[in-house]
Image 1 (cartoon, rainbow, N blue to C red):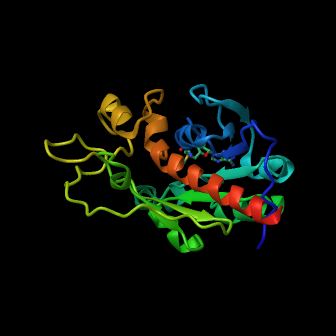
Image 2 (tube, rainbow, N blue to C red; image 1 turned 60 degrees about the vertical axis):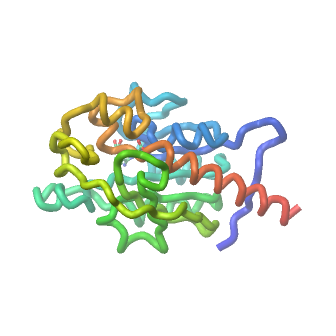
Image 3 (cartoon, rainbow, N blue to C red; image 1 turned 135 degrees about the vertical axis):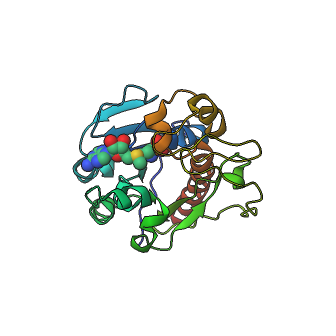
Length: 228
Ligand SMILES: C[S@@+](CC[C@H](N)C(=O)[O-])C[C@H]1O[C@@H](n2cnc3c(N)ncnc32)[C@H](O)[C@@H]1O
């Protein structure tokens, strides 16, 4: 599928819709890459560092997504996370409705999710904290609307991980999930100093979307140049 890779005027940053934004881990990386960011979440997000609109994201994408240059979507992953599955918690699966809404906009996009959702994602690219020198692994998977996302090399996981959500023994990396301990440490590791525990356990490290957003801008600029 082709997309009209429209760009804003010279000197104006491209506008990104951050759907299912939570406290803005993804947003911070995109902002650093050069986007202006608007976040949408169904819950109030007083810690979100950019413009925020409280709304249901799939409906918002359908109604307003075409006005944005680029759309990022992180539909809730509890449906596919192992700990939630073990606990039998029912959550709606929003990946397919989100993709359909994104495709209806004609804009370039990314859907992000966790390992449990990989069978539902189309040719996802995995990003890992070790690719960016972070002291955690936190694999996340990214499906694009067709533009090419190239991951950095994936270093071997040489540092052992603490058990999920548990205190971190010396010489280990943390897994910041559930009711994890060590919020200040997690803020430093993931580079999200404005977040509380609720945001940290959900977030994409900004380093991932800084890289991704930079690549998207290059791809979009190239495509715009080809079309011109
Ligand atoms: C995995 S978190 C997103 C994390 C975010 N990308 C980040 O990097 O910090 C998913 C978010 O989706 C929100 N959410 C769940 N269902 C929603 C819906 N139907 N519309 C909008 N937001 C929704 C939740 O409130 C939660 O904040």
